[in-house]
Length: 192
Image 1 (cartoon, one colour):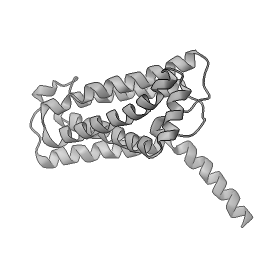
Image 2: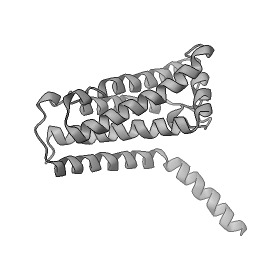
Image 3: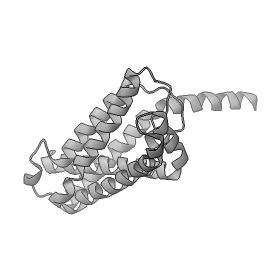
């Protein structure tokens, strides 16, 4: 049912779209993301603008390369998953360092979030999971250079699966917000 190439294509699409969506959100609100970078207290203040620009630029480049890898079956593009693994590892380490410092009430900077919600070990776990997905996208668990040929239709099917998983991931990540909005809407309905 699922071949190594199918799984790899789905993971490339998932990771590529996740990185692109994250980059677009950060580039749309650069000030919010720069505040989040500053809030982590991991880079000198003078480097915050460089890091706040460099992260979304890297995400955009890597996301585009991974989507092209999912479409074109070119092995060199699969290597874009390796720097994606590094990014996810660094994001997880940044959260872990701040948690160990006792600093929980900071914005994670995910998708340029302006929330001052608490970071948690869940974010570290989520980034570990993203590293594993990026490893699958690189073909590390199935011999990426030996990925069997997939027809265009199977590649499209795998890419759609990757997109569906990403959308599900985002829905699950935002269930808390949806519940809060539901309470607000219910209160508004009661006032009208």
